[in-house]
Image 1: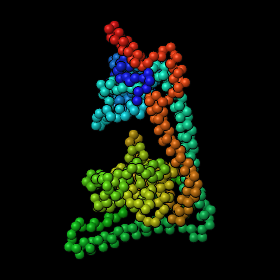
Image 2: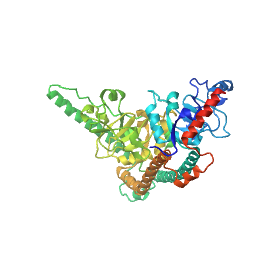
Image 3: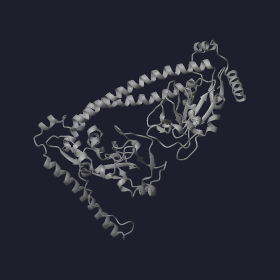
Image 4: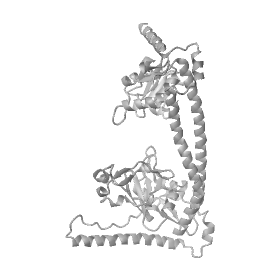
Length: 513
């Protein structure tokens, strides 16, 4: 849509220089001058965190290529493409790596240019023109040809002022939402802490005539494990007999293996435990549950996603900090994975993220729905009668998660093995008290959880609103007629076409000189 007095300008028309940073950055130094990458451009700001320091002598050579100065625009062009910022005044001298483009604006308001590059329409152009396999990027030649909406200079300034005003209000609202979210999480954790120390059920225990002893509870756990294995053996004997009767056709039924015994808790586990009521016991997740994952070869050989499949596949994305998250599921056909019996989910199992940023997050598989266990996520299925919601809430509590994470490996890419998941201690009361505890927790958290959902919804909505503000701004819909009239009265107002002609003339003169 043509906007009165606006035009479109290619980036190389309105800049004196467009380049990227070093393609072969000098070695890191303990002491030196900063060379920034795309990770240092975030939320419209330059973040001096985890920066590469390089030799001052080599810095000068790199700076000749990417001579960053105040009011330049920086744009991430490799990896996460499309984050931008304006270099502020009085910032320490730095240069760039290849993942950041340097744009020196000419005849365009730097903040206007930076906001434009973040707008939805320009982001779509970045997506459509990014190249590469392992890590996508925008070539400089492509970047220079990208066109942006180009209004007169006074309108650019007015649009920037309006955007900053609206985004400031939005950021204030987001800060309030996040503050409320943090307070709700503090309350949630306080409830869980008291619950798993036995505080909510103290009177309940006192009212019980035949409260189970620790010794009897230990015995019932071990009997539950034995009964589970006995049932498996009986099923195998029946399947084996049938296989023999049918002339040994098909695969020979496999005899069940003995149940895995978890490694004893480590010293790190022991120091994280706390005192329990006398009728509770410390046990381990691998003692009360069968813990497994989808093996790599199983995924490669058998799991084929199919849009017409009938079985939703659960992945790490379905496990949030506060439990199960519904997403657009990948699907498989039941018949194609029927041999992968360990990965069949029937509801009530515990999902555990064992690698990446969400390591240690847990969620209970929803009841009354079959699912399939996908990659990069573990599963724990109780051997005996337990309240699965109790187990989920226990490991969602700060103390419970702390026990799960005691054996985590690495920091940059945290991970847990199935052995360390089995090893995790869990405080366990009787089944009756588990149910009572879940009721006590849910009665206190039901309202808080609804509030948390509302806050999360509004936080997601706020990001859409941010994009809507930018979209309207660069479609000429943000300023009122009165504001536009005020712009036309400013001394440097001229139609965009004339401004572009003047910029072109100035660039030509600069080249000749």
